[in-house]
Image (spheres, rainbow, N blue to C red):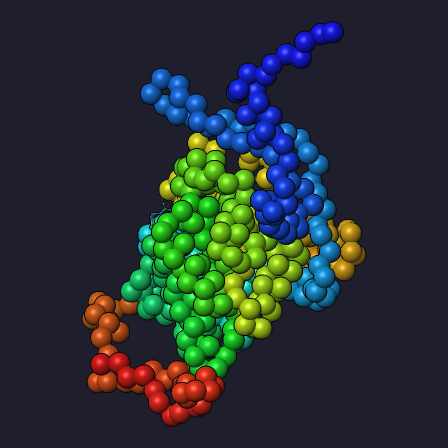
Length: 424
Ligand SMILES: Cc1ncc(C[n+]2csc(CCOP(=O)(O)OP(=O)(O)O)c2C)c(N)n1
Ligand SMILES: [Mg+2]
């Protein structure tokens, strides 16, 4: 009889670790992934002499996926979002030209390829909700009620711009009527600020949605962790879009984090994580809408990872030469506007070619008018430079938006008072 070969200890250990764990030791978590395509490719850094370049590995020949039908959007709403996306893109093209004409003060930042993410996300907000956009979310600002004229004047530092020419490109908001917190350049810092807005609203008896964005690069910051964790622990209505556009400056996402999907980070915060195709406006809207509804019900934050590609350099000064060309070609075929246009005109037949052409030329007309107005409007006077820094009329009151509640001892219920916060 053949003798049974004795296993070496290392082999036995390997067999043990490959054996299925009992249910008691095993945990499973769910990340909802709404994409109709799951691209699998990776970027590798290659050193050639003194220089470095990136190589892309994976199948880049896959057919372009269809748009996923929205569970919530009507025909009219889809067309409205499409219009915002067109305005977003055309405004940024106009800004690029104004920069080349020497009319812009400072740089220009683009959200090319990310218009669906900006516009369809902000479209899910209600009037009483809040938005904290980042530099590429100029489409979100348009949806929230700023005009292309405001944004172009801001870039040209005109007297009539939101900051009256005192601050750069994206650094403006509106806490009075549009509920927009000005972007904060320090990456991640908007997250605790927006969580604080939700907390403030809740102390005043309102559960609202507060939406902000962070990039694949910016999500590595410590304050991102602190902000999301605080919102999670406090059950605040934070809707965080992690815009994974594959690059942070010239650093590819593969050199930024080891998790497969950034949505997986949600598991460690104990909140829902969702993945969407960032070039599909319907997927973006549906995820944003569900997260906002959850927020308004007081059920806490949601992390939504939107996968897409930054289709230009970091800003206008960056030619993005380090991006492998096949990657651009792959994502250009997935352009969010071309795909949405095809969906509306050819798939759903919600727009005839003629209606589509009329819509595009109406957007161009509005933009031309706004650009002319912005170009011809005056620069600020030198004397005005120091204005608006300190309160000029003595002390003023900033009234709480929703009224100040008081937590009465014992009941934990809110009572309204007439109190207001004084700033001196
Ligand atoms: C805390 C912090 N570190 C560094 C920077 C400089 N910085 C500005 S944008 C940027 C890259 C951001 O990449 P990502 O978060 O992926 O956003 P994207 O530009 O791709 O939209 C860096 C490093 C900063 N503004 N804040
Ligand atoms: Mg990025």
